[in-house]
Length: 249
Image (cartoon, rainbow, N blue to C red; front, side, top):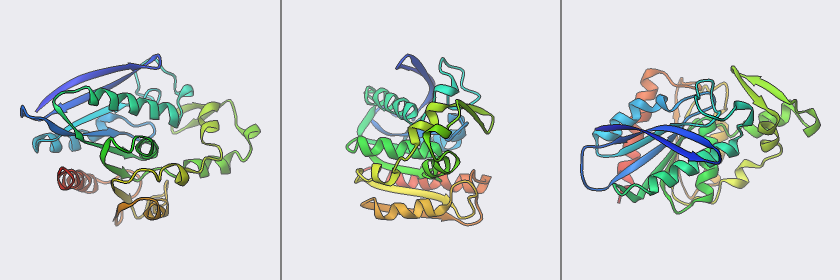
């Protein structure tokens, strides 16, 4: 496995990530991993190693302004789910420029808020992902913030969440957003993995996806919450490998 740092400049900001390249010369599939709110691409190190050991590439990255650990040139108060969508699209463009990648076998994986962003992105780039994997996707985001701030006038200039200072534009971007109407365009295979006891995003949000995707599978993890145990995370990595293998033809 070859591991290399990548930087992608776009929209006056920079995405920092890592490309995991398997030890082979022929073209190979790639999975692009999108982390959750206040997360990091490093969360998917286990997944990336397992994939690369099995002839599949991986790209992990940090969303601009998406966490307290982001070291780039964008403030968290300027981040929204749509700036993160732009970040993911920039990473997809980068991957499409790699000659070593089989462009018909690019997969998207998104966790929590990254799952929300991944679902939005896949619906607008239907021909690119060979498959989509969503890990406890935070499709509750518009509902949660509409309850907190029912009217646009209620939205504060800044609001701290889990140690991250968010700006008004974050909440404005999802106000009244009908997410299930936005993500139904993707017609490829979709695997959703969700904890049965998730206290942040009810598994019911993932169950509702069954009516919106043509090829849909939901794996409910008994006893898991939002952020899995070591055993749950290992199972996610194995399911990811199996999913990619099964859709490589």
